[in-house]
Image 1 (cartoon, rainbow, N blue to C red):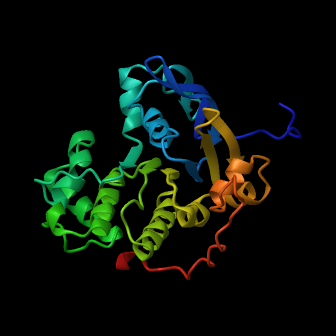
Image 2: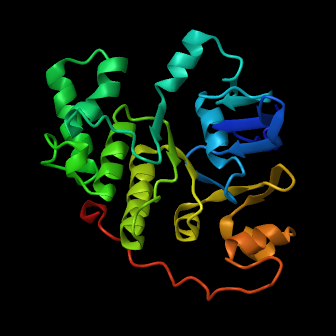
Length: 277
């Protein structure tokens, strides 16, 4: 190969001509995206456009009506059971509600993926659990049950479980849902810190503008009217320069019909210690 010709690294995740459907109803069609290693990729769009559904396709919970999803150039959609199992071990997922088992302590919840996917002893698992909970600011809460914690603490406990296996890819479904603005800011700071410390690729579904602009390296906009992805790029570039008025309106909280805009968002706050979340 001619060394003077630049090569493009293989995307960490590639979506090719993806159709999402429920029976005869096509929710989204012909979605294409390439997600780079180490970036935070945000899935945005109006309510009901299919953001969480796309995330579930990426994780393998749903099968495409058409198209493929590739990881590191390997076709995940067409993979056999062994290949899919291997790949699933490299995923960490935080669902909207945290998805913690209410009958288990935080330590037991975080230990689940370690017990299922690793050959570690109980003592080794207990050590890792303590480290992961401390990493998200929950040192000393190992024996608490989810019902004894605030919403923000449950989200952090879910995050500790998501990173238990040091995943290559983290998926977050509306991580700030139900949280007050200050707690959401602290969760954003924690997501950035974990991305940097783990070197992970992060895919986030959110409609929170502050989070989109704070953590997003790039975004894809799903449009419910056209039933496809109408824009991709850095969130601020999309807000200021997208040729699609619906995308600009969404990212500036402006009514696309009336042209009424809210005041611009305040400047990002100083970094916040995520252990205070």
